[in-house]
Image (cartoon, rainbow, N blue to C red; front, top):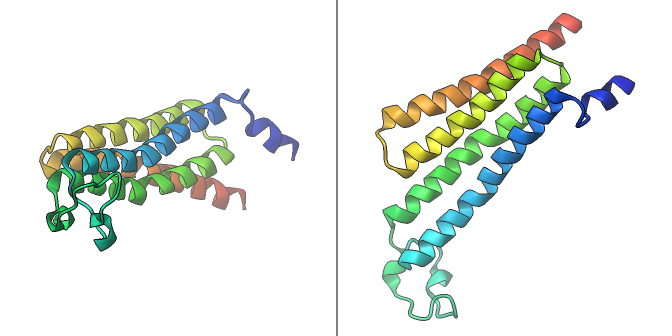
Length: 160
């Protein structure tokens, strides 16, 4: 128990790296829907549910076309879905990875590598880059998570 208390402490540089990178990714995950909302309000379109085109203070002049697919809004939604598919696995894998006490440099490379790859993926998606560009950044982030999970599994099996 004493080892865990030292490990999960702000004095531990390994845990600091995880806290920083995980917090950044949580902010990304929670701010992306706000971008979608801002885009919906900006173009008064991309709404999803029939009740969204009822008159309200936010939508004083509703029209049926507001329920039509709007690429400007949908791009943000797709970015959010991609985050939802990726970031939770990073949060779990990163935490388990920290628990097996990997070398600090390895942790820094994998955790920060994931964050940088996800930010690059965001900008590639935002600026409508071709699939190959987005896929490259997605692959880099995915490999980071896979390496963390594999390393953690290896350490758990080796200890058992």
